[in-house]
Image 1 (tube, rainbow, N blue to C red):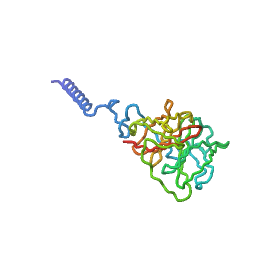
Image 2: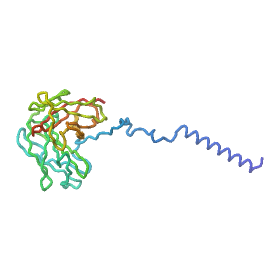
Image 3: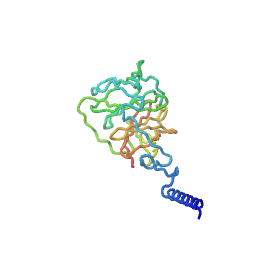
Length: 281
């Protein structure tokens, strides 16, 4: 065999070896298809039709905004004024807030054992300082939530507030389907089995002396609901759903116990009913 023929045969042999190796490598380590990519962070894929539920209120700042609580301590059972500002990244007070649930600012106060719940609507001064009259009867550590929308984005910033004196903490009440809202009103929660990561449909029925009571409009709906997680008091986003009754939807981000504070208006007065719920993993 001549030299040119031997070189051509050798080149053909090398090409065949390279092609075979390429096929073998593809079989061993194939290019992943789009539907084969693992979930981010090693977690399970969310159930169909659900989305991760962000928790809010765990920090004094979020993004470019910060809660500046000018009143970090109060005396127990005394009429006081709570003052705070929302500052931007330059330290200047924010003054332009969106209207959300008929208000530009919702101020939520609750003690760390999830008692003493209050939902207030402060007023803003010309310098951007919000103020609200408040009276907290029990000593202890409270969480203050400034719940608002700015530039089209919902925000909840949280800070701690101290009420001087010896605190007597209370155990979280056991879950119950029906609770009292005062003035003879009974509120019953109808909810399916609650599971973390799945949207929950929370419906409340109000009655008095066995008769159904239809709540009056309050903050643009038939009621207002705040949901807090036991332990860290994570603030959940809750939104009302269509209908004549007090109905809401939320997604519980983790298993555990939560406290639901429902507020409804009946006979012109706002009443609060508090529920403990268990959420399975």
